[in-house]
Length: 201
Image (cartoon, rainbow, N blue to C red; front, side):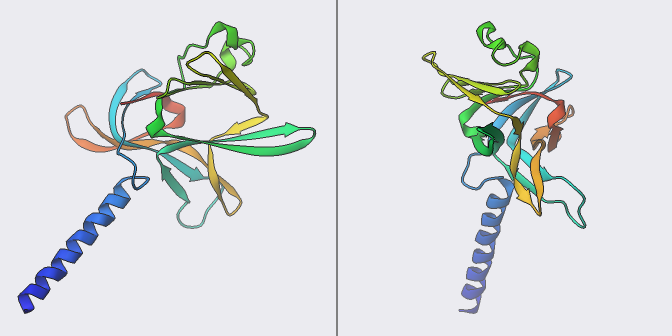
């Protein structure tokens, strides 16, 4: 009986450890570990597994700075209409996104003037269902596969995932796992400002 009780105890500890690892290794438990090709601003591509976005609080902190890792892109739009300012939040799960393009994207000519000119577009997102999203100076144009378009005007845009003690928690960059030139696997990290595009498998 003694050996059997020890065996059961060890079994429970092992199972509990595996559950902890499963929930901590994936930014959002229950979602698949996503693979992507991440291209940096120098044109170098990286094969990344378990890709996640890291959101970090601004300001000055005593102790650890609040961070959140998520498998989604969070966008906060500030809108002012009739002198009333409101905020609209958009969540784009990576599982529904095909591509995120920060640099070297093509904007249809018929949209360029509405978006503030070709140089005013700072983000393009392609969803897995074929929908395209173009983020211009003060306007978002969503183009469906059937050609229908939806426009959303905004005053300001931020990649924010909530607040902590009055400080916004905003997108800092993207992480995951990748291999070096020698084939050694390790942690991957790229700041948002150095990211050219992300292509999900």
